[in-house]
Amino acid sequence: MTYADDTQLYMLLHPSERNFAIPRLELCLRDIKAWTIRNRLVLNDSKTEVVHISSTFVKTPSFPKLTIDTSEIEVSRVARNLGVIFDSSMDMKDHVKSVVRAASFAIYRIGKLRRYLDKSSVERLVHAFVSSRLDSCNAVLYGLQENEIAKLQRVQNTAARLVTKCRKDEHMKPVLRALHWLPVQQRIVYKIALLTYKALHGLAPRYISDLIEEYKPQRTLRSASQALLCTRAPKKCKTKFYGERSFAAAAPKVWNKLPFKLRSVSNINSFKKGLKTHLFNVSC
Image 1 (cartoon, rainbow, N blue to C red):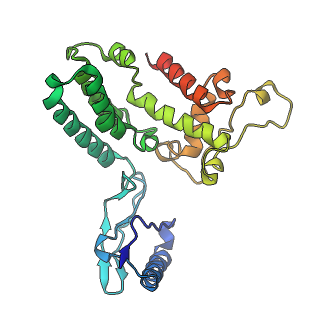
Image 2 (cartoon, rainbow, N blue to C red; image 1 turned 90 degrees about the vertical axis):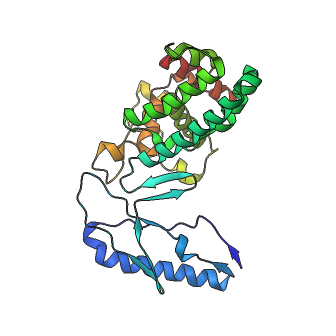
């Protein structure tokens, strides 16, 4: 028998639809399990996770257990999805904590070897084991509370001190700029802007491109030739904490703040270079 990892099933439901939605979800799970058996695959009930994601601003009753044949699946508070830890309130605190822990341990291990390595070698190790963790799926961190971003920034500052051997009381912005490292917040913006560029130029999946729309006014206006995107609130979003963090809302906001010269670049490598320079000038 073989195993298929990361098979996902999700359902949107209103609190009033719980009695209808839960049996339907159980039926879908049974159908998936039957399909896997027919195709010589295994659905491991013990590794199946269920997360009920809801707003912290709205009180919702607890989600009941789901049943697959004779197995009962309890609802988890967190679940890992392709390297990202989603929690029931989508505040991403568990994911940030996991990234900080893994990156800090990597810094500790590199620090044990620091005196035997030159600066270039240390920087390569930091990029491989620290920066890669800070950058992985970081677009989902857009719009988080400043104290959560600050935790990641402290990790990056520690990594920069490890590379440069600067003092702990030294201001870090000039150090990061000398290393050509964007701060964590700007790295998040960089990822969203780059993904938006790819979506506009046919380099991203269709489901990403469909989330944004080019600004085309009904009348002849000067802004029509500025390569802007429509800024519209995501449908069915009642709070800024959730709605404005979605790609459909974040992408136009980030894109429209870029200079027109950068938005009109046709080569992706030139766009990356210009975007990094722009974000350096904004942050430092």
